Length: 311
Length: 326
Image (cartoon, rainbow over all chains, first blue to last red; front, side, top):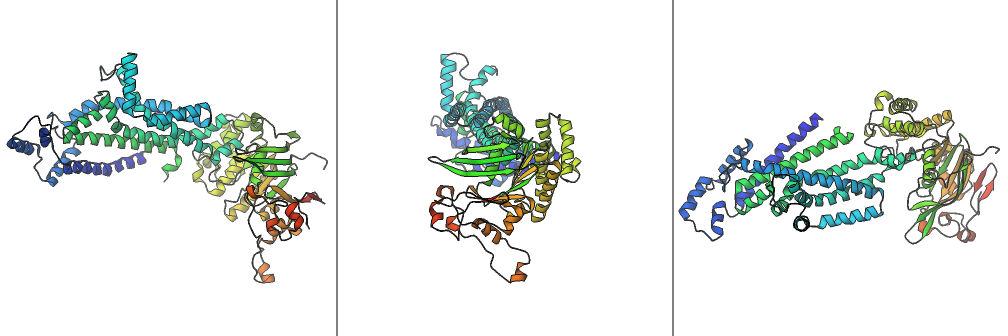
């Protein structure tokens, strides 16, 4: 187990290096910069001399290899640079957004798992039943709904009409503020999880060893408890991992909609302001989150499936 | 025959429900198996032998279902038994071994536990006692160092070892009948012989009857006292094992027997082509009228094309279904 963990962690390093390179190069080939963006809105005209000085100060004038070397050297020691906009360290900006982001993502995923997985399970055990039909139609709808529309509708219903919950914002950080954005973010993964769980369970139910289990004379409930669940879990965990990992990036829309002070909204704001160090920092964080979740999923495989340890 | 047979299958019909029509995947299948007797069911793929076995186990799944006939186990009709009653029978009174030892065991569960389940399910044993008995069961099927092997997962065992585990599971509760559905097809030839010997020996010791299903006529004839040959969902011939080789009555059986390569034949008669049965098994949607073997039969006449042959009883508890048998 420890060996596998060490190998997985070692695998992260080259991935991370590649991501750092791509993130950096992508933003250096993109047209426009923080300085030119200041002129774009047409409200202000900045003296070319001032723009020149700002470029120098921000290091935007240096040759590409030099800037890259500097960026890498700073990044590996945990220094993500200084925001062009607020002149604060990017790590501090992101640090303030990290906890709300994690809270939102974990809450959304908990909702998705707690409802999606059992629903898929029940649907698979009674294929063609009312539960199956209703939950699968629901899942398709859940997958097709845009978070944006769903969020707005929930705001309208629960905040404006019923006045049960606050409509947006982080407030005191309490659970009341968390519910609507978490549900809006969790519905997609929930629907997907319900569908994959159903497919996984149906798949396992057709396996030869389930026929063996039945030939042993066990009740259908025992067959499911002893032989189906664990096998289906392998497939379900894959989906959980993929959804979970990409959720922090996917939260952008919901965070903007609910004015949630997470990494996603910081990313969007920074993009519009060409605040490249912050954008890079946010993307790096989202990627790291994805990699961490992936590693955890791999560890879960090892814990569940004995075949993997020996490969 | 003064005593009742252990298993009596009488006029079994298995329905295959299509979207529009219902076909009979198996029909008019009847056979008896005595206590402790080894009975063989032989036929090509798709002739209905495996689903016959599943029907006896009560494990037919959609689109297959029992269409008619009686299945009598030890004097008791079980074709209409409730699912709960069938669960009682399965495992404790009828054990089953499947063709694919690779996939027939749960990959995520240690083999010891998969055997121990039998004692927990049918003999109300606690888990620790059941695990001890699982170790003993592994020893009986001659798995080396069973005390270590019970903790192994299926992927850590060879095909032959897995099939031994399957045998241990099937025989754990000393059932009266063991159904072996192509138990050696997926194994190496040398391992095949070991597995067959082991099965025969254990069943003899426990007094367990065997319903052996295979496409390998030689294997079945070796192991079983009586053999029935199935073709396209029907039994076409049943004979004692030695007679089926010496004196096959149905043209299909004759074709099967003459298509077997024999050791030493070449030195006696010189180089010859292996004989084959021309054509393929008709699909269930396109069974020919009359005798189902008529398109491939060298002896087919006009009557075979229109009239389905009835069963002709022969001496020594044998039968054949052919207009021109002999």
